[in-house]
Length: 158
Image 1 (cartoon, helix red, strand yellow):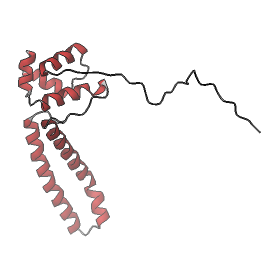
Image 2 (cartoon, one colour; image 1 turned 120 degrees about the horizontal axis):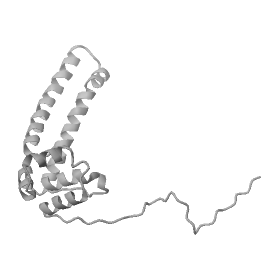
Image 3 (cartoon, helix red, strand yellow; image 1 turned 60 degrees about the vertical axis):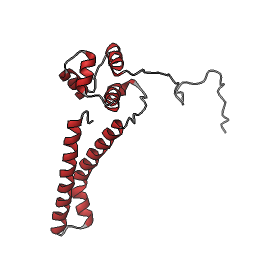
Image 4 (spheres, one colour; image 1 turned 180 degrees about the vertical axis):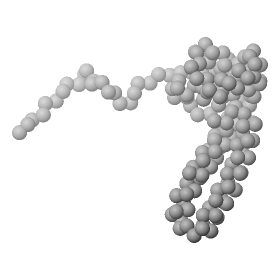
């Protein structure tokens, strides 16, 4: 996940370099007389890395526009906190100032995607971001437990 502008600029540069490398590698393989299927097999791993990097850039750009996905469970809380900061246009330094901690602490926490964050700490970060969190609990769509109001139906064998 891209967490700040310097990481974003570095990713843009890497994507540009990867595009050129991918194009050169493909031309070299074709120049060696490899068939289309062989070339595809050889460059697929590079293309996969390229596609992943492009996806990370697009994700960061969406966040910068304020396009934040809904948090579906607490497993994604750390990622959501980072996304909120980016969407609000705050730097790690600005968040650190609001929290009264050093910027390196925010950077370290975000690098670890707030792994094992406490509810109190998450609450303080949300307050510092000026964000309220609403929650709702939903029952699973398909229950794995039998419905006690239903009677089992007998099946005829025979």
